[in-house]
Image (cartoon, rainbow, N blue to C red; front, side, top):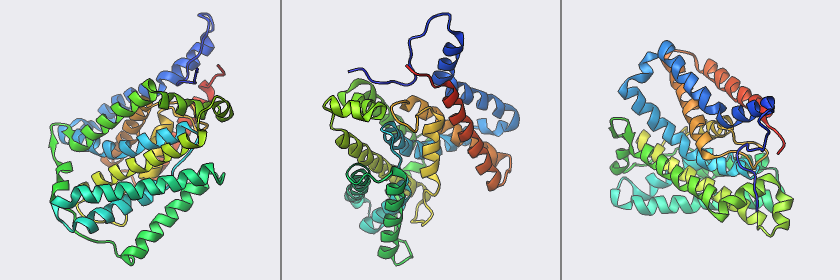
Amino acid sequence: MSVAKPYESVTSAGDWPLRLRLFVANYGVYIALLALLLAATVLTPRLYDVNTIAVVMRQASQLGIVAIGQTLILLVAGLDLSVGGIFLMTSIVVADVTNGRDELVIPAILIALALGALVGLGNGVLVTKRRVPPFVATLGMLVLVKGATQAYTKGVPGGFVPDILGIVNQSWFVLSIPLLLWLGLNAVFIFVLRRTAYGRKVYAVGSNIEAARLSGISVDGIRISVYILGSCLAVASGVVLTGYVGYVDRFIGTGLELDSIAAAIVGGTAFVGGRGGLLGTIAGVLIIQILSTMAVLMGLDIEVQFIIKGLVILGAVTLYSLANVEE
């Protein structure tokens, strides 16, 4: 079964406008990343300090782990806003179950993964069985999860984070545990998407849901599974964030859900599904994180940072829309 891969087409050698559009669609994000890095040498040379690079890569890893899940969900024409609630839920579970004891970290993570999978299952069932639009379903789940955590903690989240999670703050040159985890997860899911039947089914469902159904693919099963994977990846990022912060913070991970969607979109994953991939998302994550760091180094207000991010997202969507071609 042939499925749509990231912006491929059969074009004649003389069709230069079409070939140019395909080149932009396939490599535009990497050119943009290179241009941004070159601009940083002039605007914010401190970005290239070893300590700054280590911080950028660690923060990019926290965002990137969530962005893997968002990419999978976007590939089937979905969306997940509920991960914002999963971050806080994970932090509370880790602190409450362990109460600062290192030996209880594994059970705490397993419990958080189970709860995260339950949230993902709820999202998937609402989207597939009840036909609720992904935006509405996952936004409702976000409110539900945040409400449940507020009720559980009586509005005052707290607890002791085990010392062992502090390992995420250690760096070896630019390497860190979060970065290695992000790279490892990317390697696994790139293999899954490119080399397994499951990956081909993900692309098929996103490309044409009815054709996928008629070919015998369990469309609802695939869509539910990516929501569960996305939630579990959000739990993994939540564990990293909890270790990074070192305490339970009600604002933990705020904005990462939107930044993760932005990173996937900037990286070339289409809202309509079936097009994109994790290599592009990696570049998108780096663009979003480097832009944020440059804005901080330049002393720009938070409002200006939001404007810059918005312009980047709109520019990427416009560019990919112009470059998109019918195969």
